[in-house]
Length: 231
Image (cartoon, rainbow, N blue to C red; front, top):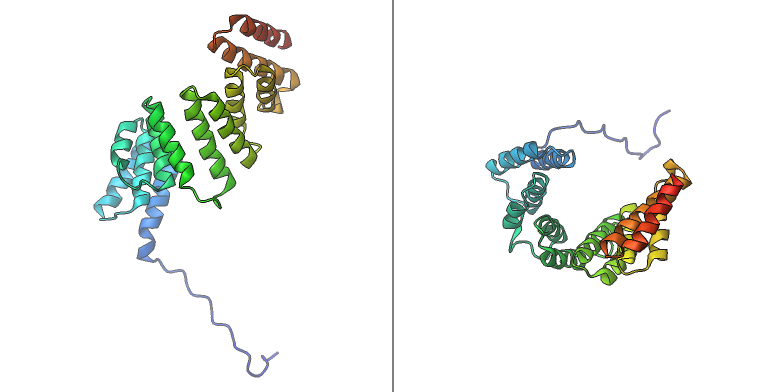
């Protein structure tokens, strides 16, 4: 059938043509894939090649910091980002991780707090949950378990299936002596694949480790004995 009078015939779709302007984007995606797979040396080599091409881009700096952390060079990551992009949440997230790797807990707390402060509220919930978990982890490392528990609660409100945050939450509860609440959270964080008895045993074991760490050997012994009776 012929088209109705006045109807416009659609033009054929354009052929896929390589756009040189996409080169840097593709290169950075490849570098990011190397980092995600743990291939730190290839990532750093790729970053060096892109820099030789003259690219100056904050995202490239963040990728380099990630690659340096991947390679176990947190001090170099801090030097790269120190005094730069101070309001950028990704920069502060990376600085938090780097300071934690170096045992600089107070600096890590400040950096994680800044990452949360500068992260837009409409950011993906899982991404924000990760930031709250990181912040809670640094607070717990600083011995501020009440604040850490609040951060983990925020993470779990954003992502209830975030088992790592739930496990961390349980550790902070137990560190404060809230053993019953901690056990419930340790249990909820367990994988169901091993069966209910194995999950309970793991929860009692984790609780015992925290009790031992906080200087309560009697409570720890009881938790360990309960765990052994379940396996």
